[in-house]
Length: 510
Image 1 (cartoon, rainbow, N blue to C red):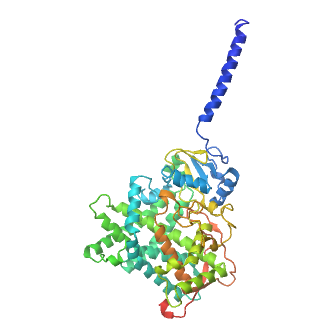
Image 2: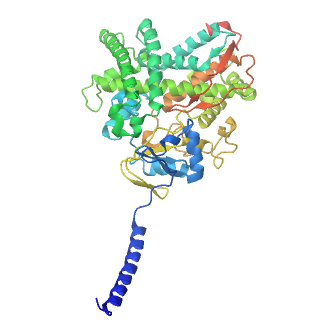
Image 3: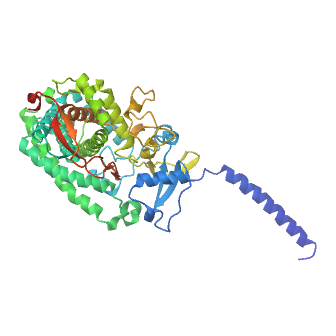
């Protein structure tokens, strides 16, 4: 190369480099938004080794550092945590269809086969199942028809508590058994033999409790799908061991119920239970309304799990908060005296007038949301949220626990103040339209059983506070309000309380 060509070549390379720099700079501005920031983890394991027991609190601390939307790798799973009402609105309203899928853990797939309402993917099948559930089981007429079952079970717990006057009662156990009996009665209690119901109750309660715990237990198979076939922690094996006993019980109940329907004993429209409704749909010729046995059992599992564990959990939290504040306890009982009367038991017709009790329940849901991170979502395609790319297939957590305690949203957020929900203008109901308050979720995947849950929680709490005075055991001046994190956030220390009859008429307790 001569002396003349070398400067030309150098100049050419400089010019090319300058044009390449500007081209890259311009192109990078056109590229998609970056994925959210987040903490660094270890190779292969990601942030998994650094997870703490109280995940909802840890996620809140990470949000304070990285912002309202951030990422973390848990094994080979990319997870995104969102902790802002405006960004949650983008997920559940603006891009709801994209984020309407679930990311079921292995235990959930084992439990329902993927044909239930909670975990099945978004699509026509899920829409049909949810529509059927809401239309056929939660219509006003069917809720009214099943009220007699709810009322009967509430009366049973009143009688049982009256016999335990002055004795310490574990509230979580009492409420769980009561809610289980209420759900069982609504499902199939109208015509089932009491011995069968009693046997089912004890067996089912134990199996379903274990199954719910497995759903919230961190599982290596969920974070490293390539290792799923090895079932390192044995969670899949344990879940599979529970399902046969659950299915056996459901099969026996379904068979027994079908016999009563054939004989004509199950045709009382005034006492129609949910299982009868489902079995009648099974006989439908219309493919848009028909349903098969695996689908029936999947729906039953959803109803039992949702109607017992989460419902019992929030009732225990409400009672703990009320018994922890004598002034709140007095106000709610004064309201019950005024609305219900000292010579009457609580009916569902009284519930709309119990405004302070309703505020207490809402405040308890705010402080202690039973599902603090809601059910994780799985975007069907990459989407932009808050200026960041949320990749397709990532696991998206909505940290409602954090939002419910955000000082920018709530005044004195750590305090139990039911009055914040009295005469509010913020539309703080359970429908999922206010993104500062979503205890039941929002959008297409909002909990479909809200109406039933409201009735059950309100009726039972109103009855327990109206008919009984509750005292703490001697030496228990303050109640431990700490929680155990899980897919359902339970109270760490079970609430123990002593019931005493509040009304003078002993026949009310008979």
